[in-house]
Image (cartoon, rainbow over the protein chains, first blue to last red):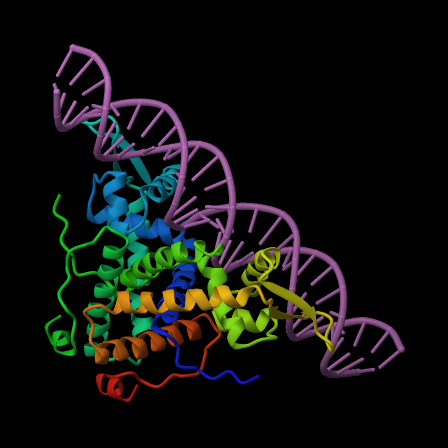
Length: 163
Length: 163
DNA sequence: TCGTTATAATAACGGGCGTTATAATATCTC
DNA sequence: GAGATATTATAACGCCCGTTATTATAACGA
C-alpha cells in the first residue's frame, strides 16, 4: 500500500493539524476535568474578566450559542459564574471562580510544552512567517464569512522579520 | 471595548482558522447535500478507490470509527458503497457510486475558490513556507500521538524555495 | 489443531459546533 | 409614549469526533 507523505494541500493540512492538536490538548485538559474548548474559554476569560458571552464568542471565533453551552458546563464544574449586568438585563457577565485559578496555573506549563512540541524542527523565522500567514488566512476567511477582523495588510517573506 | 488584532498565538490561530475554514467549506458542501467531512472523504476515495475504512481513516487523520459513521451516511445518500473484501471478511472495500462523480466535479471548482480566498494577500513563497511548516507541525503532533507519519526533516526558511 | 493474540469494524457515551427559531429585553423612530 | 427593530441569550436539531468496550475474523505459536 503505497503511502507517501504525499505533498498535502494547505487546506487539508490546516484541518488535519488542528484536529490532531485538538486531540492532544483535549487529553491534557481532561487530566484536569475539562475539555480543550473549556480550557480555551478559561484562558480568554482570565485575560478579560467580566466579558459577556457574546464578546467571548467573538474572541474565541465561535458562535454565541457555543459559549453559552460551554459556560453551562463550566458553571456546573464550579469554575465560572454568571453575574447579571447592571445596565442590561439581557447580558451575563462572566467571572472565573477561585477554583479555576490553580487549575489554570497548572495547565499553563502544559500549554508551553505543546507549543514547544509542535515547533520542533522549525526555526524561529519560519514560525513567525507561519504565524503572520495564518493570521492573514484567518482574516481572509473571517471577512468572507462576513465578520472581518481588520488586520488586512499583505503578508510577505520580508514581513516575517518584522513580526 | 478594546479589541486589537492582538498578536495571536500560533496554537489558537491554527484552531480558529481551521474551524472558520470548516464552516465556510461546510456551507458549500451543504449546497450539494453533504457535509465538509463527507466531501473530504469522497475526495480521498476518488483518489484511492477500494480503500478499507481503516486505510481511509489513516489518510484522513481520523479514527476508524469516524470513517465508519461517515460511510453510513454516504451509503444512505447513495454516494458510496461497501463491498466485501475477497480475502478478509473483516474488511469493507469502499467504492464511489456513479452519483458521486458529477457532484464531486461541481465541487472541485468551489474548492479551488476556497484556496484562492484564503491565500489572498499572501505571496507564493510564504504560502510554500506555511505548507511545509504545517506539514512539520502535523508530523510533530502525529508522532506525539504515537502514530508518526515519517517526513521529519527540519523546515527552515531556505527550505521554502525548494518546496 | 487449539488456544492466544492481533486486527477491522461497530456500539454507546459524551463533548464540540453551527443553523434556525424563539424569548426577553433594549433601542430607535415617529 | 407606542410600535417597529435590533440585540443577547437559549432551545432543538443534526453532524463531527474521540474514548472505551465489544464482536467477528485472522494470524500466530505451542
